[in-house]
Image (cartoon, rainbow, N blue to C red):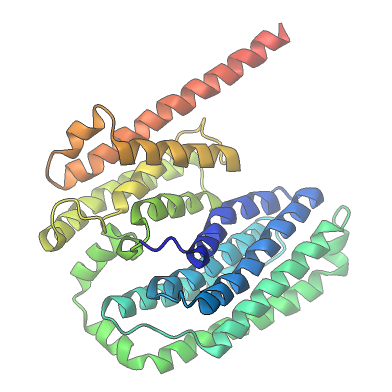
Length: 347
């Protein structure tokens, strides 16, 4: 695992993404101003991680993979926040996120067959414009009162987003053309085994040499950015559990029992925690839930360590499920104490 400063800076952008989304979604100018500051810091680290890696001679394949992923997570979190307060049209967000998912999956496959994709100059320009324009939009919203910005600045936002949309489509075509040989190989891959690998590794996160379980647990929190209810997340979690069983079996046949690249269990564990309605999607609650879950999953206190000794796909999921419920018990106890203290104070 490479815990270098450039990789830590990249990972920092992933961690602050939910916080930026929550602040923008509040539709409060002061909170959006704080989101602007945090997002700008994240944008600066995008430059710093590459600069530091080059100066220290610490450029790695994993760093080259993580850097653009972190950019996409942070930027898309901000764009989804702007969409939630009706500043950006959903169809533009769909184009941007769809393209990012496609390119990310292509990168994962390219790294797996040891034919890494080089980020194009046009893509770098697109990312720079996207970051800059997001900062400008947040700046406008930070110093606006009421809904005045809708009438005075909305046309600027529309023009900017159309430009980004066009660049997004263009870079997608460019990547496909430059990597047409890679695409042909991908198309020839067996479909079902490929899907099982994607599920078990949570779209390639499991192949990370840098704490794949922790990264998967952290990335799973990003589902709170989507406009879904706790009940809907429960349904998603149940479906994920069902499809995870055959996927884990497939990976264990190839890589061995409970291989480290199987991370869908960590994702399901976190989703179980987040699906309970007393778990609010605030930055503090999400961070506490993540820390508690990782503690139980890594150190495996009784009875988790007993479950972890069992073999098979179900038991791979079971120890994370128990770790999730241990976390839920602590969070629920804390919420009850909070309510009790408030009632006592009211008396």
